[in-house]
Image (cartoon, rainbow, N blue to C red; front, top):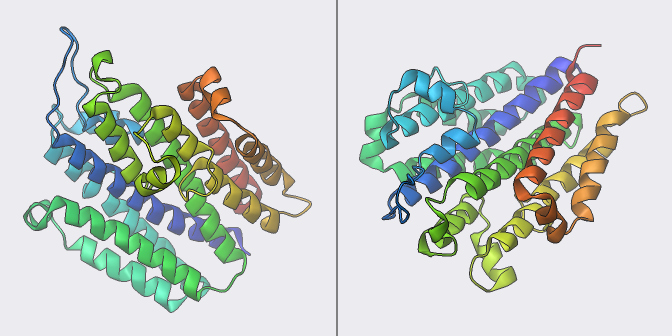
Length: 317
């Protein structure tokens, strides 16, 4: 496969997944912002719920270059519809559609129609319409369109190298997003130490699980109150949870085994190393190292893996 084709297909898939992840984190932040928060310790300021999507996506600096204060409407517009923010839902779906258009011959007509229809609908939206029709409904629309595209891809595309690159991109983006959301929650969301284990803490961890479609899985596996250590175990080590780090690395390692040859073994080796640490890891070891430190190491490794994939598969020979 030509490196240009592989690159376009990878970014098409990665941008669709990024749009969905952005909708998920905005949706859960919107729900959290409706809760009655209080600062229980004098002199400590509550970290606004709307800090979460900006920090987790690394867009806080860009946001404050455009806006002087933090407001729900401004954050939603910035991350959903702002054409000058390359990571906004609007730009992700626009660029995903452009990558698909460039590779019409490598994807199915159903995949193209799915992306093109989504983009046409997104292009005609404005923030007033979103508020009128319901903010939550807009986020659900984005998530469902991502599900539709992924389902159409699985149901119609030939199992060739292009299909593997599309799946590879999905799981790379998903793993990065899960690690970032978990790290931001663990470090920045509680207003004070008094809230640890309290109602606010419970609803925040519950909201995080919902943002990753893991709330029902947590209830079925643990059948108990939501405890941070168990949330970390679920979202990092459980391979039967679709958005966990372990599940993502299972898929990434398997795909790279299919794609690799004698000249591209380094991405497979690195993926195998990350996968082994998750497959044989224990939650006690994670907290002994420190959850933040563990997640930062994972993000550094997944970024290195992405660079290796680009170097070996996407860079022109």
